[in-house]
Length: 614
Figure 1 (cartoon, one colour):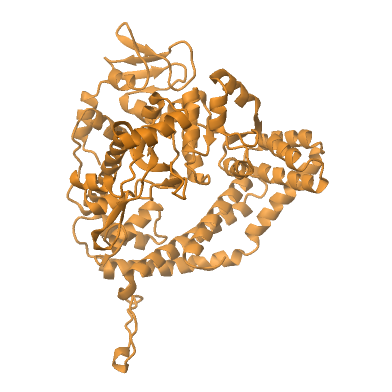
Figure 2 (tube, rainbow, N blue to C red):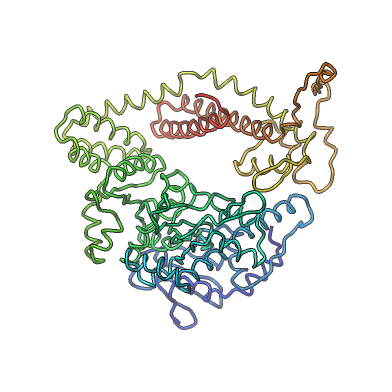
């Protein structure tokens, strides 16, 4: 935690009009400052900043507070992240409390690892920018591609910090080593492949580079677009690291978040160039899923800024399929979704170059549809008057409506479907109820299976505690870096926000992890019920039996996955009980079904990792 003295220093040295002025244009108005609200689309300035009181007030949205609340509200950061943001701006060193205990030492080591990754990413960004603008190869290949083939101007290239990776095998790695970075850190950052005998080469070569930023503007990874047909993959991304997880990031979000808040909706596209082309055309509330299939984490990231999304995918079959897949995912996360229907062969990049800003705005507003109308138009485009296909269409639309938790919205979509499909609403309601009953039956068909898991999780908890006590300080090898059994368990529990079911076990775990001094843990154990096992002397008979210690890496991985799987079963069981107790309440039923389906998906993924068939 940041010390109180540091917090006081940050607040006293921070200039509120200076900080807020970085985000919105302020004009002097008497002793105060005035500007347009960043939280609403207003024409007359109603946002007031008072330097003497060190507060701000937005009369259009009703929001207000001090400098910390502004950073939290505008940048969607936590309290501590906002303090660190201001400390960095004013070059203030941060002091922490309880620096000497084991927990904070672990956190400091973790922070140092993150900082190394950020520094290397920033160095790579500056290296690629220099290669693009200052070298003959970069100008002839990269800059020529961006300006002449993609139609980007220098201003937009600089805004998105685009760069170029040279053709040389190890130019980036070699220069990074000369700057003092270590080869293992460069490798961990995803820029280098290291072979035996210390031979290494760059992962990105002869590619235009698209840096990917996090919410605070730090570069966390890259996408590289080839400009040479000899390379098979058109795009490659940085390998995943502690700061770069593809399923949890959106390209362009850093540049778009302010406009997403102001306009209260965003366009979701597929590619890097789609985002940049739309920005250049004047449409700035646009983000991309970075070339991967849309994930729930990405949808939740968008929801931090707006609950209204327009899917703007390519007009070909793959783009339509991606749109259809995204509809249900959006509805399940309570996001209001519309879909753009564009001609085959057209995409956001093409349209942004085809139309002027006003023409493009007009085109987008005229060609966006709710999911009922969108699916109907897809049916008309590909199947015309096939009654069998139309019956599938109706069931598909009803399946999407079943994902909606808001009862009023569900009713309105049923009315829309009845009108668009030319079918009686009573028939649609009847079929929708059948879908809901079918889903509920699947959830209830084997309740005894879940109850068996209740006692099993306690057995695994005991096994896990014994493992920590017996082998907590033992080193286990990881791809990134070596760690201990205790650190691995602690990291796993924090990542997944888990707690032991039994209070005794949680208390032991807290004592081990959070206390600076050695604690007598014997009082937590029931010695009568604690069992210790040992193998017979098989080696005397010439039989080699592997022990837990021989395969500790695999064992710790398996037991943690087993524990999470059982933990998920326990949560599913609770939701099933909750479902049974709220059969008469439609909203509660839908909420339970959504949670159970989400948890079941997690359970299935865990079983795959444990090599089980489900």
